[in-house]
Length: 352
Length: 152
Image 1 (cartoon, rainbow over the protein chains, first blue to last red):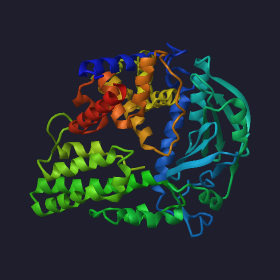
Image 2 (cartoon, one colour):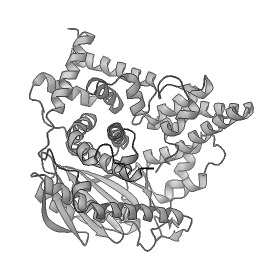
Image 3 (cartoon, helix red, strand yellow):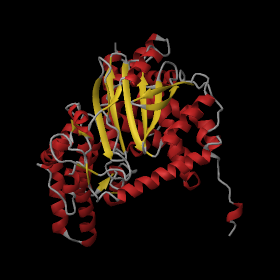
Image 4 (cartoon, helix red, strand yellow):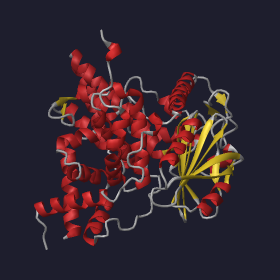
């Protein structure tokens, strides 16, 4: 049996429309919680305060502070000023496995766990406790299916707990740990098992925490070597901050995200050099950038990332563009690389 | 100067009321997970709120944020995938197709959803996904070829 193009198109439209229409809101017509609720001003201020805290910490990053020994080497952490450092928590319930962790900065991080009853995520961020609490409180106020349930004690902290699942059990616990807001969220756990899981969350020392990391998470002690390995086949443009990437600062990194942080400034640097060189008529510098980006097709870390991300293909598209007519087509027809690459690759956003 | 009389074009509350369901549906088709879809849409409005009056096209901005955040979710491959959800439409033919759509690689499914649910031309899809149009066309071709094989 064969399907014509028209039949397939029509079938896909019908399927997607039917599936989308199964999603309904039990609070249809509700107001935007962050705007219409009395807590609006507080939330906006909290967000601004968090942004200010992040900016403050970013400015203080040059000041490295000792951080408890790490996992066998002298780690140094760029801690949030006045804080005891990021939470170091593990879910110890039987059958649950830590599957991922990433800390883009001392101010925020996340972990994921998988277990027999679904998944768990654990997230922390400086200064967002009020924001998170307000968000779930407002959500509960507008949804009959979402409720706040009894508080729990999680890792020694009193946590507000909400049942937030749209059409099934799904719980979230939010608590404050010093300057950090911490959020534990279950996927497909019932109330009892969520309580058991929350009770099994334990604060541990950094060495224990680092030792628990799975293979896809880079520990602080391994970071410099992993970055070196990733950079082995990558020519570096002028101004590339290799030392900054190698510095672990007592934080763990997901291998995929670290690959992104390593390759993004390399690609952006070379393409930027090509753009500047073309504008200045410097053919030697332009050719150097073209040659460097031509090697990107063989960067091992991009090959590794290619199965799960669109980013490598974007890099290669720009490598092709600068080697040919200098134009890309992802901004409509025939857009110059110079006008497109910063936004398309995210060169202005950093890789955090 | 008449700045005192300047008013926002459309209040964010109105856009939230009118667009939220549609955006959640789009996010659900992109992620396959209802609660993640709600989170994504909520975060899109939170991102839009501080700059609302400066946005040229708030609805386009929201859709772009939703699509990008759904893609960001896919990039985090260590995040455990939600359990497969039970049949949703209760029409076997459509549920089977939805199951096949969910098996597509994330970026191919995104192109299919934007093409056949949002009815976007390839140039707009390429702009939304920050992908060259040729790559989007290739992803669509591969996705349709795969669906044709499995659904035949």
